[in-house]
Length: 453
Image (cartoon, rainbow, N blue to C red):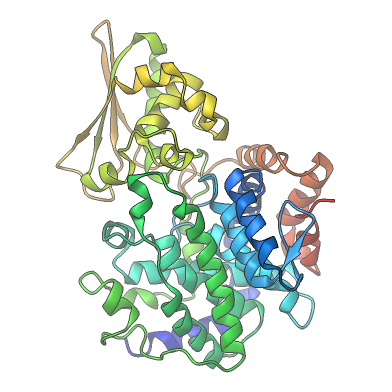
């Protein structure tokens, strides 16, 4: 669509808080709190500490808060480092670009010191909603999650950079021409491959970070008059969709119901510390174990019917790497059966490498269900040594907008994660500010609660 870039730019530059439905505002506040909790837990990780050491070695102007620390860095460095933390433990939200919170929120808060006047909570919520919206629209224009990720692109990075750029443009109040240039520049910063899935390497943790950093940089360049290509979404050689999604592109999705259908409303908050593709099966197994009061020693076999895409993405059984284990559907089910949960604690080295896990994994079988489409959730069949069999399928996993976590469950998740790094009083203060963000006059209050010392 020749006009789609300009329409998106006008949407970014012109959207105001009064246009946001009240339920969307409430959901945005919950996603902000959830992302910050996941990020603070991510600061308590060896990978993040190595990334912090790299930033410290580079040096730079200290403007933006590095979450979970007493230090600051340049806005681009902070966006990158806080993005690493946000996606570190697979606890951040999903259903946007895909992991929109881990991209958009680090970019926004890193760019905050660059605003020429105080930013209130309503302005931050508008920028956040816009970032979620644009990142998701770009993914849908690529043909959707299964098509784009199935081709090998990791959409959190390849599409998330647009969301980060859009959010920062809104925060900094760039005009329509600058917003259009920022999106064009972001297109050239796009990337991110699923190659990590084969060996449990760490690049997935870096993808949200790189998208956040790229979005900040794209907006700042556009603000200074650097131009981006105007034909980036048109069906022309060298354009984004023509290059990354030539066979699957649906450019009309960029602007369909723009400003009426809000993409944040379709996003999920994750109850489990694993890939979203595992969640429906975890729910299903949990239902079976509870309904039939089955103990682990009674399980003869767990059979899971999956589509080929999910098998490729989550069928691995390599557990020595935390990154690999969090992408493993077999391990997620083993953790639910053995430890009663697939929460972050169930992914500790001692638990995932326990001999009982290996024994149970041998009794978990993933099979292709030819009747499933790429977007269908798996079914789970539980078989006991006594010959009993039960089968369960959860079409909408817990945490989804139509099967949401309760506020109490969300707060319990947030508190358990944030308390890994922050003192309890600070955890509670941050919670209170986020849940009343639309009443906050200066969101530097939020940022101030993310540091320590």
